[in-house]
Structure formats: structure tokens, C-alpha cells
Image 1: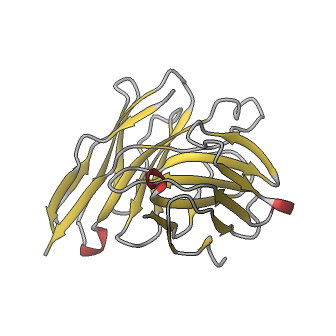
Image 2 (image 1 turned 60 degrees about the horizontal axis):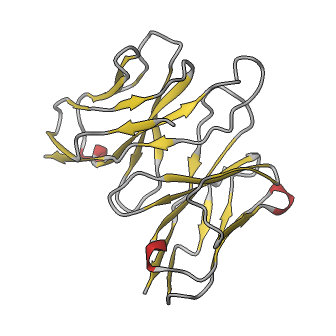
Length: 122
Length: 115
């Protein structure tokens, strides 16, 4: 079974500064996706960024980027130019892709880490 | 699209009562997932539907839990004989058919409190 670990229960950053959230995972699979989701207080979870394991290039979405180290099974999220609206709980998640490249489909269930609460100080 | 909706948003019930939650996915999404999230933790997978077929169930889904998705549209999650340990946020998510790390869109959740 796959596991996802976020070792930082809480992080804080000053507005306009950069912060990095850590995530490690354990899997025996070679093909998978990794995601970072954001859950603002009392609001719906939304996708921030995704990474395909077979792609070596790190994903980037505007101020959000990842550092994907497949051999180390590490997947950190960097938020640049932090904004007050970035304050939320952030979850790292894993999804198997086994079977998809052969033309099948995987069920797509997500395995989440415990989350990191990010506070942004003005 | 109007997003994933869940009803009710909050439910308080006494131990031993039955409760039912509803999820309406985004209209063209054939995949539907239920997750449970306890306070301060990440969501845990409960079950998955592709159209009306329930294709995967977690061991977390005890015999007291049942989920349906008639006609492949909305889904219901029923908990019978609720226990205090069932108190949690129940999240529903839906996604389009296909591969490629298709994004799951989450609803706002139903917060269950069992007293």
C-alpha cells in the first residue's frame, strides 16, 4: 500500500516571501501521479499542482512549483511571492497510474498526507 | 459547471440513528469518490463509482456504511447505527472519464457530529 507523509504540521511565511512544504511518499509502483491540494478554512479543496512520475521536469503553475525527486520519493511544494490568500491547509496526494499506459484505466483514488497548515503573515 | 454539491452541509445526530448524505457531481463526470476526513487529518478514501457501478470499497467502509449511485448521477452515502467514531467530514469528489491524472473536483463536504 502507498503512504504519504507530511512532516510539517504547521508552517508560516511572511507575505511576498517564499515557503517550501515537504512531502515524502512510499510506493513500489513505477507509474503514478502526485498532487498538491489546498483546503482553505471552511472551503472546498482545490487542486494546486500535479506531477506525472514519468516526467523528469518539475511542474510549475504560476507562483507554485514542485521539486520532484523520484529516487528519494520526495515531492515538495514551493510557493513564491506568498499572498494572504495562500493561507490554508495543504495536502500532498498520491494516485496510482498502473494500467493506464497500457490503455486501461486506474480507479484514481487519492492517498493523502496528514496536511500542513500554512499561515501567511502580512 | 456548477461544481460538486453536497447536502446537508452539517448533520448532528444521536448515536444509533441512521443518516444519509447526498452528493451531486459535476454533470459530465462519470467518476465519483467518497472520502472521510477527521479533524486535522487528510481525507481517507471510502469508495469509488464509475457511472452506477461501485468498483472499489475501502476496508474503512464497514457493514454499517452503504453507498449508491443510481443511474450514474447523484450518489448517497448512508451510515446505519451511527457511532461517535463516525463523526467526521464526508467529502465527495468527481472527475471526468480518462487518464492522465484527471483532476478530482471536491464538494464542500458534509460535517457529521454524532452525540
